[in-house]
Amino acid sequence: MENFSFAFVLAGFVVGLIVGLTGVGGGSLMTPLLIFGFGIKPALAVGTDLLFAAGTKFGGLLNFARQRIIPWRVVFSLSLGSVPAAFLTLALLHHFGTSNPSVQHAITFTLGIALLLTAAATLYKAIRGPLRQQIPDANETLLADDLTQHKWLPVLFGAVIGVLVTLTSVGAGAIGVTVLMLLYPQLPLPRIVAADIAYAVPLTLVAGLGHASLGTVDWSLLGLLLAGSLPGIWLGSQLVTQVPERFIRSALSVLLAWAGGKLILI
Image (cartoon, rainbow, N blue to C red; front, side, top):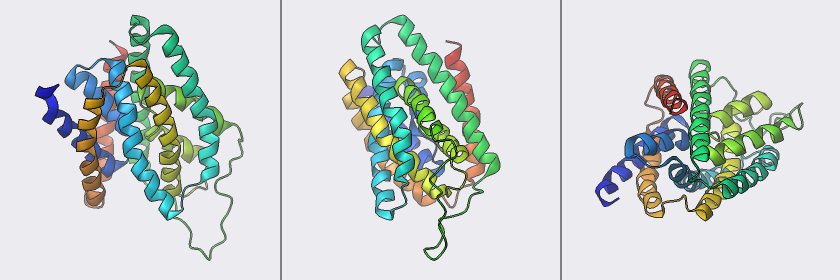
């Protein structure tokens, strides 16, 4: 671990920078990087990355809460499905054990599927671009933008994302944003991003602590990754208006598709 200390900090910085620039979830980048770049076992990479995500997203939650743009009704609907699904998935991991070869294969295969979905969602957002309106002025009539015609679909999608995130640490970023855009077509983009960050915090915290109880969290590795990611996210947020986001998202979608395909074939 000592030999890789600087490399882990640098990896955290690079991932944080990309997250700050594009909003693509850290899990979709950090987990395959830990597996392919550093040879860390899938279950340990997932567990560590979940608490890494919880720590980084909590800062975003506080920022959005201060701005009062979090649609809490949306967050509640998603959490109603995602958090119980995370507990159920953790119970299954406890029962079968993360060292079981079948469980390891299930984690890598599901991670591959999640990365392919993330790649598709990232490419979709790169092609379409930010087409939504910004938050209306206070004098404008505000529609019920946090309501959906399909009452239970957010709970169902939340459950699916809860399983994906607990197994792979991937799903609460690009996939979550894409799902929210489809379910809440009237919700302005800043409120969609705020909702995605807000419901991901309890989900990744529950899943991460569950993995810690399984022994699949490397705490020293977690500290090194956070030490790099926090300044990386800050720098990315400062440069976001100066970098061609569409090009970066397109390139990332290709990289994620490659990693997802490789994991499926393991």
